[in-house]
Length: 186
Image (cartoon, rainbow, N blue to C red):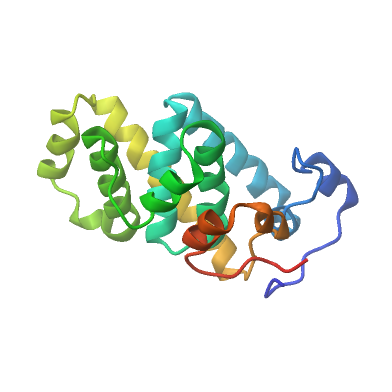
């Protein structure tokens, strides 16, 4: 499974059990640094709180797929499929730009933030603003993509595989969102 051994912390695991009942592999990874995980939850919660959930998930999916993070792509693609789109529509988002011009601009910008933030220009920001996003909205997309970079890179660099629970996703969705590491077999 992971490249590093982390302490077995039953209390930490129980406190961070997924709503579906399993202990996610990323929780096991962060067991060695619970303060970092708590700080992550606080940061991520603050970012999500200021954004429309659908936009947050689109920006996050764009960053995660750009970073080739299966874990984060699967998790956030699942949210999009559960709350906003069909599984087929989410699967298409991995390779095809969204039809909606605002969503297309947000996803393209989030990908650029994740892969080459140093190449962001005023023109990139103005493109988002031309679609009605405010300066605060642009910052929210930046924060979502940059935070995803931290989490995705942490999971991939430690060898944390996506949870076996993702095997329950529809095959088309699961295949499209597995952009990097394979799903943990069990």
